[in-house]
Length: 199
Image (cartoon, rainbow, N blue to C red):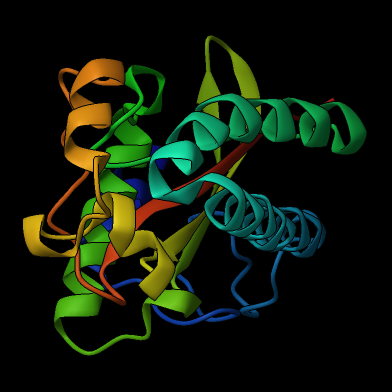
């Protein structure tokens, strides 16, 4: 079966929990490629660090201050982690706030499959997907892990009644095309996405 058909088959299936996510390069034995655990570890390490930074910013200057912190610190953290790990790391969302967080086709298809899986009862915190794809003649490893919305996130990403004081106004100033509000706790906010060229 060629790569296109394998990818189509992968997208037609629900994404399952960690260790069970369908991937087109999984051998017939069901064993994960060795690189997946590395990608999983890198993706899992980023959100707690960001949450710690945002918690400190909220405590110091409230949710409006945390918006600026997230805007400045999250990209710095992703760049630093990319340099340290050899993975290109970023966050993407179907309802992005940062214009740079727009998913590419593979990421969009994956996010949509995450949403379908959550709608059928899957635990969003366990949703992941990996694959090895060809981009411009180069084999590239790709990995994504869903990011469920935490209670703290509602101050900047929740419904209108959940937003912190002054947040809507500040978002309008910094992100006039913001689409990243209206979330509930546990809903998939987006995903960590990693890519790495195969040497």
